[in-house]
Structure formats: C-alpha cells, structure tokens
Image (cartoon, rainbow, N blue to C red; front, side, top):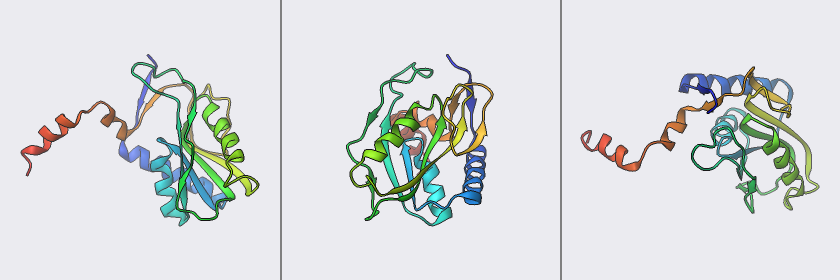
Length: 175
C-alpha cells in the first residue's frame, strides 16, 4: 500500500488557485479539456476564472479495489463531451495529477487524432495539480511537485467509501 496524502478542501482550492495563476501568467487557452474524473473539478474552476468553455475526455485507468499503486490499461471514451461548436485553437489539457505520465501522453495523442479536433489544434499545453516523483511527464503547469509518490486522497474521494444507505441514514433525522 502506498503512503497516502490527504488533501482538505481548503488545500485543494488553494492548489487550484495557484495553478490558475501559473496558467494566467503565460498561456491564454481557447478551450479547457479535463481528463475525467480528476480533471472535472479543476476545469470547472478554471472555466469560471478564465471565462472560457470546457470539454470533458473520459479516460479510465485506475479501477477496482486495492490497486492504488497500479495503473491499468487505458480506456478512452468514443467521443469528447462539450457544448463548444468549433473545437480547436489553443488547448489546455488538465488532470489532477501526473503519476506515471502515461495518461497525459496518451490523451495528447488521442486528441490529435480526434476527428473534430484534427488539424485545428494550434497548441496543447498541460496542467496538473500534483506531479509525483516517479512521473516521466513534465506538465507545462504544475501547482505542486512532490518528492515522493503518495496516493493522493482528494476531499471528494471520501464518497467512494460511502454507501447511499449511510447518507440516507445521516440525513433522515435532519429534515
């Protein structure tokens, strides 16, 4: 079992804000693309701060119980989800972390071949909240570079351990 780094909501929000400042200082993207699920809360905040549209790319690599320190085979969605009519331009690809770097590398490759984007991308830069020590990928923007390789437990991940029955019981007496 990997060491765990528990992130509070305050730390999470502060880290996203640090990332936003780094991006603002040197890159003006036309479109934010978040790698799901970790990129979703990040691009939600960045799209509000930068006032630009976003898109979602579903990629699955970690799945199952007890495989926190292993990355499985990558599976990409058939389509990207967005309300943007004309995709392209300067893209900022966001994920929560660069663990091995494989997901970010393969996502860039997937985006360059994705028919609605093919030939329309002027640049792709990457942004992550955390980069682990073992990652071979160097993101363009990174809020925190870690000296170790912990399993990062983000504040919303506690819901992975909670069953709906527990939530119902918790709230049934609160009206």
